Structures are given as C-alpha cells and as structure tokens.
Length: 176
Ligand code: SF4
Ligand code: SF4
Image 1: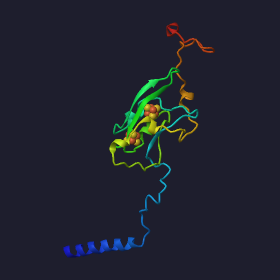
Image 2: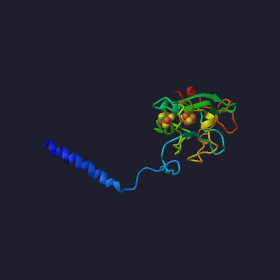
Image 3: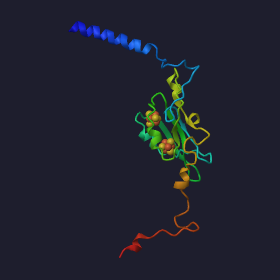
Image 4: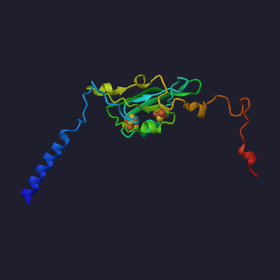
C-alpha cells in the first residue's frame, strides 16, 4: 500500500510537470515588458487636489485612525480663511500593506490608491514619503468632487449676522 502511494505521488508530480510544460509561461521579462494591472489594483498612494487645484486633505486624521499598521502621520493646521490642511503628512511605505482602508475612510477623496507598484527600494528610509512626494497636481479619481462645496468653510462672523441669514433660534423661547 505504501509503495503504491509513493509510485502514485511520483507519477502525479510527473503528470503536473508534463501538463504545464507546453503552457505559456506566467512570468514576464520585467522591466522590458510590463503587465498592466487591473483598474482597481491598489498600490502607491497619492494625495490629490480639488477641481480648483487646492489641496483636498483637511487633516482630519481619519486615514491615520483607519490604518491597521499605523503608517500615516500628519500635523493639522488652519488657513486664515478657515480651511484646514496638513502642515506635514507622512506615509511610511515600508509598513504599508496597501489595504486601501485609508482611501475608504477619507471624507474628501484626498488620499487615493494608484496602480503604480514599482516602488521597491533597498533602503527602507527612502520609503518614507513626505507630503511633497505624495501630493499630485490633479484630482485623480472622482475629478469633480469638492468637499468644501458640500461642507462649506467656517466663517468668523457670529451666526445669523451674515446677509440673508436668520438669527439662530433661542431654545428658551420655545419652552411652554
Ligand atoms: S493602504 Fe492600508 S496600510 Fe497603507 S496607509 Fe492605507 S490604511 Fe495604512
Ligand atoms: S487624507 Fe483624507 S482622511 Fe486623511 S487626513 Fe486628509 S482628509 Fe482626512
């Protein structure tokens, strides 16, 4: 019985070799040839801009909180017009597992995955990408989305004092 199992195991291995011998190889001669990844392939991360060319990131830390390997860090800041932005933004690609959770969590479509997978380095420190390395000139996917058109920007004037604005309700006046 044991002998038969050994013979069968050997024959199975030969059969698999024979079967795959005449198939087209699955490997390609990279870098001379490059395979186009699928459209939703998740690789290098970028920070995008809104249709006006302004940074989409509002430094809300949601991507950082969603990241399972804690490889995103940043510092928030606020512009004089009330618009928030990241003073600095860093991704450690030596730790990133390209799960895409950061892009899912982002409310402003700022952080997006691209199919660029050619980012192997010998020095892990060179995989620390700063905001300058991540920020691209265009909007990436969803080119017409503008977060501030939905959310508005904070204004310094008290509520109800701007033209066309009603004063806020006084909850005390609603009591019986
Ligand atoms: S793709 Fe995943 S691991 Fe990489 S930065 Fe985003 S959440 Fe973190
Ligand atoms: S990239 Fe998106 S989720 Fe991350 S801090 Fe900026 S706005 Fe928030």
